[in-house]
Image (tube, rainbow, N blue to C red; front, side, top):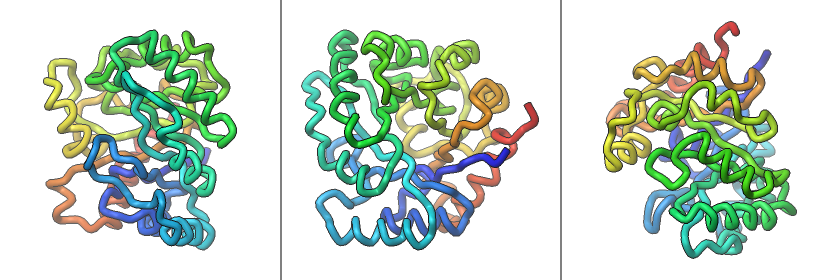
Length: 271
């Protein structure tokens, strides 16, 4: 079986959207992920929203290379959530033929978060993308079970999804049985990287690793063989490895190639 790989934003964070597509094409990825909305005010992002020329260039590179855009980042559901805040992101996703938008749950009121997620799915429905809720141990949606509970209580909209990131699997109270319990229709892609596993890390350590210091698959202690054996065999894989120190000595093409080569043995292992 030929696996589908996407070069996640964090694996090509040094690139513009068009450059990321070119890197993906050169290194054997079928898709890329783009962060067109920052994960916090003033945080790094790729600039395309509101820039007609950048959008035209990105669409042209998609056409020339055959590499698609898999997912866009990022929508955060917080206390004052309004799904129309991200209308420009939905429009860009439609123009780029993206498949998914990554969603983080940051509202500590789970009932309100659930209602907000349901509203988001409804607003996104006409754009043809899924709203993939990523569990992260420092957020209000801290485990796979929490993500599944939110989605079921939201009525499991047709475009709902759960995003499994290997890092958060390895650092949250999520078991392989929890992963196996996620309905297949809620799984649209998963992210791979490595790190030291465990649930003892501080809030600051969790965030630092996720944003700055992930390890190549095989360099940490997360049970990647178990995780990817538990996930569907045909699930697209987003290669999400950022390591700012190691990237100082590798250009973006070399890093993207190294990340993909390290990921394949865990994803393509005999089941």
